[in-house]
Every structure is written in structure tokens, then in C-alpha cells.
Image (tube, rainbow, N blue to C red; front, side, top):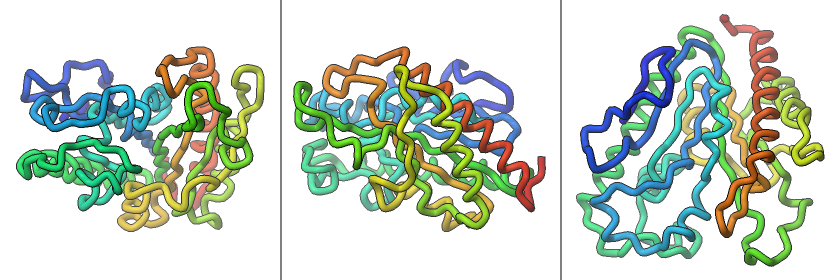
Length: 285
């Protein structure tokens, strides 16, 4: 685990106790009411697990959310997972966070079914530590500011039929899908609208991005559901699902200019979100 004290940089030396593995995550803490998270950005797998891994590197990377940590610098508290979602999935409850059943992973065979229980337990301990850490940080932010904004950043594939096949229809696949299923519209509806407007305010490859709300998923996963259950309307949670228009899903090459355009829009949206949050009853600067 790597927790960085206030105002330190994410590039600080990882506080890992195991010289053979990278830290499971990095966290930057600064005062302010906005948290950004990239909980599926990681790709590495700890060495003790690698003999049990059955999926190849390219297929695994396709199902992760690479480069989503590129957007998270707009937050005051910023959390980046360094390990793969398949080592421990921070957006799932503990009973499915580490699974050897392909039914739980879209038919993909991730782990040898004989994966030792001790390895599962080690992964689940990290999953539990993440939620303990989030409790500590979110409670401190709410105690200081009254209301906070949590932006959980993900990405999704839209060329599943192959590298040369047509993309999935735009109608059901916006460039940015905002998951706001736990968001109390009477309180945070204006914030959501202004946040979406901020994302649209910067063109991507010369075009205004297609930004919509609650198109692809019924919920944002366990993390936002847990935040809502624990902290209610004190935490406004928005899940951002970026369609992979910023990279090639199949050869994993990034489009740097598209990434810069999208990040510019994200920062504009965060500014809009901060301004809307500051006008709400119960907020303390």
C-alpha cells in the first residue's frame, strides 16, 4: 500500500514491503471536496499469483481500464490501483472480488481453478484494506466539507467483434456514459448537468463528445453502491465510463491527442462540479 501525505506527489517512492511486487495502489491526499479514483487502471499481478494465471496478457489488458488514471489529477484526493482488477476487483463485493469461475468474468478463464485459498485470502485482504482506507478518507472529507464529490473513472470496449469489425452502434454506446444511479437528483441534479456540460465543452478530434447519463449499466458497481449505503447524500458519486475512443482495444496503442482532449474536458467538468457543489446547503469550503 502506498498512501501519500498531504500535498506530496504520486511519483514518490512506493511504500511496498515486498521488493518483488509493486504497491497495490497509490493515493495522493490534499485538502478539498473532490475525490477521483481509477480502481481498474492497474495491470500488474503479484508474482505469487502468476503461476496460476491462465488468460494471456493482451486479452487481460483488453478487459482492464488502462490509462484511466491519466484523468484523475483533477481530484484533491486521487486513488490509482496499480494491480489488475483480476487480482482483486475493487468494484465488486468480497464474494466475487476474486473468482476462478468464468461465469463471473464474461466467460474468460482468468485463473486455474486450483488457485490456492491462501492466495485468494491474500487478495481479499487487499480488497478489505481498500474499503477500510476509503472509509477513513471519505469520512475525513465529509467531516471537513459536509458534502463531497467522488468521480470513479472507468472505460469500456466498443469493438468486441474484432479489430477490423465495425464499432458498436453509437446509439447505445456514448463516448462518455455517466453512471449516476445513486445520485439524488433533487440535490445533485444541477451538479450532474453542469458536469456533463463541462465534458462536452472540449472537442475530441474536432467533435463534441457524446455524453449521456445511465445508458449502459444499471449501477456503477459495488464501490459507488457502498459509498451511497454508507454515506448517503453526503457523497455525490458519478461513475465515468469512457468509451475507448482514446486507444485501440486490440493493439493497445493510445491516441495521445484524444487523451489530451478528453482530459481537458474532464478538468473543465471538475471545475463545474466544484462550483455547483459549493452552492449546496451543507457544504463547507
